[in-house]
Image 1 (cartoon, rainbow, N blue to C red):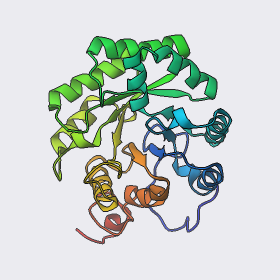
Image 2 (tube, helix red, strand yellow; image 1 turned 60 degrees about the vertical axis):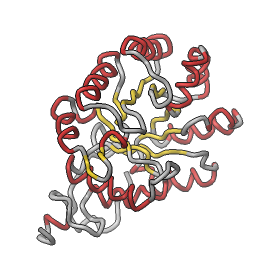
Image 3 (tube, helix red, strand yellow; image 1 turned 90 degrees about the horizontal axis):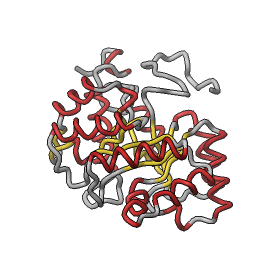
Image 4 (cartoon, rainbow, N blue to C red; image 1 turned 45 degrees about the vertical axis):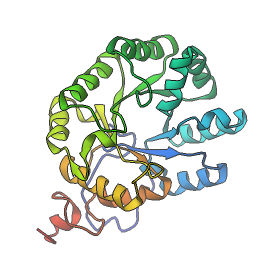
Length: 270
């Protein structure tokens, strides 16, 4: 990694790439090639995964999408489709077509989720194992729905289903981690106690959903870091939120709520 500015001013350390903890997944809504190049040049050292979201890949020219994925791969950034697109393929019976083309295009991972469909534990296990064994793809499971309706036990069980089936890690839907504005702190801590940190990636809410704003998203990120620590894995970060999230991780984002953050360690705040 390039030498960072102001490196003699200490801040909490964390892993450099390739990371197993403190992973940041950036969401790609169809970022143009020149802008993508600039993002990678300026903040590629902060990006571990990129997700080409929703059904967006379906409408991209093949050559452009291939170039996009090569650029990410060359920067050490893992790539996946969005789980909603996988759900469509599973429901249509076109799952093998999806997996085959993901490989051909240059994706290294597939997301298996249940936002719009319901999969039994057996069906989810089969989908995950098939992607791994037949196509050699890494699998990112997802647990939770945007209504935030699952019990603690149901979430724990679903995470275990994904990991036992061979998922590399599991995204945790943001709306399941909060009860209104209040974090389900007991659930977050229980997840952290039951599973290794590299297995869990906590999603931030995306601003295209009703009721979500950038300030709410920032508050959610700060709360998760405060509860789970600097190296919590976080997903759904916009390209213009990468540096601010890094400040949040290190406790250098203008508040003193992070007990292991730079401000608190310097004696600022209580």
